[in-house]
Structures are given as C-alpha cells and as structure tokens.
Amino acid sequence: MNQAILFNDDLTFDKGQDAWCFTALLSAQVITIYFHSFQLKRLGEIDNCTKFDLEEIVELWLEKNEPEGSVIHIQMR
Image (tube, rainbow, N blue to C red; front, side):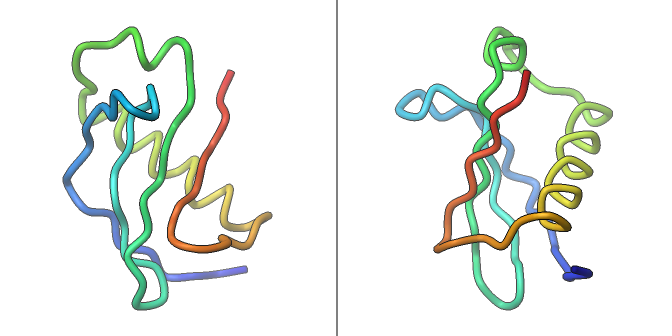
C-alpha cells in the first residue's frame, strides 16, 4: 500500500507507554506512533539519523499493515 504520510517533528519519550513516540498525518488523520525498544528507551535523546530510520520503519510497517484507530505500536528488537 502506498500511503502519503507526513511526520511531525515532535519525537518525545512517553513515560506512560515507556516508549519513544511521534505523531504523523496519515490520510488526513493524526496518528501517534510508539516505538517499543529496549535499546531506544535507554537513550536520553534521539538524533536526526535515528529519527529518519524510525520514519522508514513506519513506512515499511504501513506497507504490510493497516492502522486501526489513531495509535500504532511498533515492537522493535
């Protein structure tokens, strides 16, 4: 599936979810994407290179999955 997604520049660590997250605009809907990763949650901040990698992971996830609702949880190793 080829969907247009616009990523917002609001990458933050959500203590409640214990995961890094950011929002994006997908088909005129705001969605929140959580990245559950032991390695990522140990980081105090995420650089631009890693952020672009996370955006690519979301694009690959969307090729294989259809979001249900306004939240996506991506489990990473």
